[in-house]
Length: 164
Image (cartoon, rainbow, N blue to C red):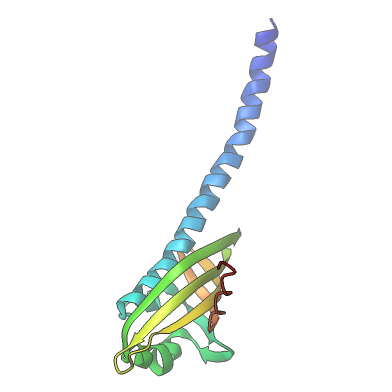
């Protein structure tokens, strides 16, 4: 008799928890999709080929790099990063980490990384520690970058070892 009374209660609990699990799965899928967009951008930089990257950005977007508003991605591509990549022999990211927070149809992402650039005409590589903060918007099943702000600095030298 008790099991007959508990059955409707257990069914209710399962029904109420189903949307929660679906929501968790949806948020995990959204987080993975946002990471994919940011990863595609990073991979294009490493390939030194930004063909098609414009589709990762919303039609109205803003790019800010190291204290300068570059305009939209099209301006940034034409006047900054595009010409700059022509001078690179390689561009490699390391120590990459990304944190994503989903807020409805908006995602906020913070990326931390190091990057190394080898120029075609200089023997010494450029090594920087960088961070980027991006806001992305869901449009249907697609996430696009609304705003990207990146900055970098020369990494601090490692502390001298105290071993003798």
